Length: 375
Image (cartoon, rainbow, N blue to C red; front, side):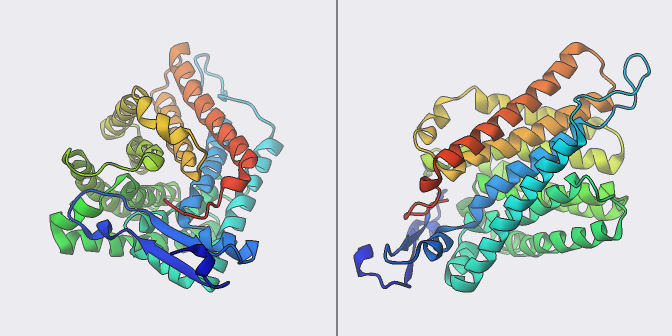
């Protein structure tokens, strides 16, 4: 439909009919907005849950910075030490920046729910969009874990954990219930790399619960996430070559393949209290998947030609991998320079990617909300 014929308040949802086909496809959720609308309402209409990729990165960076400034139990000389030294003021500033960004984006999405409820419903029914509805709750949980002034046993921490975890469980019931009741044909149709966000949501919540000492609750959430991760992992591996590929624009979401096992490794370490065989296996799997992706730069070349918010999908997985690498080195008390060098290399790569994405975003603010919205 020509946008000149739309009214000043009309929003048209166009969902690709192939979303209900029996082939593997990731159809776009498009939102066409009239140019006559006010800029603020126009931005609200184009905003979707995929923009929480940005807060994913910022909140995980705050957690990474906090973790890297915590001391080891002991170094090779038996003296406490830290990986990096930053003034406490820097940690607080990074956390506050992440908090303000997440709060602003959450407020904008709440306003969208008020003014454009139909588009929110369309996201909920879309098999890519529904996965990103986990994103704001995961971001808040990461921010809660990174908070420099709230202890894990404080009443506020417990209450906020429940507030951020219950929506994740509710979305689990919706998504996993569909997978279970509609069977293999349905899952093979809707499964895509972003489906791993549902798994990551359970794992982040499980890790936060384990840090509070709620081992049984953490184990429940961990088992729920990992069982469905195995099903999803096998489904994505078995997709046939004849099925449609993930659109070029969305290829950065392939990095979620190693984000899930990295977060699983962190969660299990918090639950078991030791970086045991299971945690190591998950960490090594994430390293393998990371190497498999970075060894194929041509896969992402076309998606990097034009700036898009999907670029932020690179940052969060790298940050989680850096966190898992740090926990691995700390737990095994590896004091070799090569082990610490590898950990710092992952951390530096994560920070550089996040800073670079932040600069690209500020330089391309006019491209953040295109008229033809696509996940």
